[in-house]
Image 1: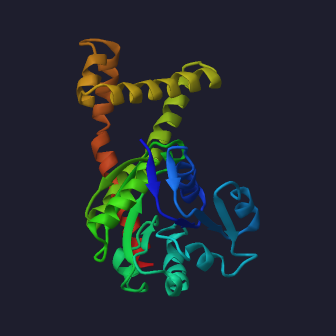
Image 2: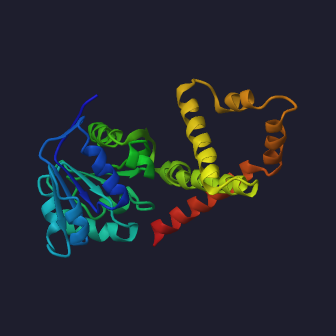
Image 3: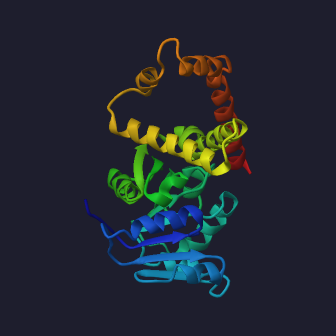
Length: 277
């Protein structure tokens, strides 16, 4: 399926902004009016300067951000949360009527962004995750008070270029960040610990990595292909009286539900702290 987007700017094309940029460079995506991106350093900007991408560095061009957003319909804000409001103040005078500004930052509300932007600019909040790099992101998307259904649909089209999109009320976006936003780290941590367990059982590092990573990859693909609840897939692996049943019982006693509840609560509390900083 092909996607056509209007002129788009990404301010702060770091890890997340850069991942979205790669998705927009897919042959299935057409960006009419071109892609403009900014970074602080010329070294980072130069690495992205190719083809349809106009890449600017603020260290060599103080007006880089203003230049990038001039004429852009979609503007993605990819800088650190504490820099968002100042950046919005910087670009506010040159944003044209009908521009859609979408933040990628945790903790910064649409109300805080709307307060420093002209009324003719729509604001949305997004929370993509790092699998955007391979086109398998899950992005939470929330509308601000000035965004229309058409604005939301256009933003959905953009984030669909790098994976799945979940449209939610803004009050749920910090909670979403604790699951899909932070979730890849939880998965990688489980992989680390399972790999250590394999090494402790006498396997080499390479053998352990092959076993664990292959298992995660295969289980995820099986879940994606089967229209079956994961609990049913687990039951199919867990033969009564077998080794897996014994292992799963140990995991049950560890009360992983409580552990994940605590982890999500800690992440949510930090998101709220960031919003207040």
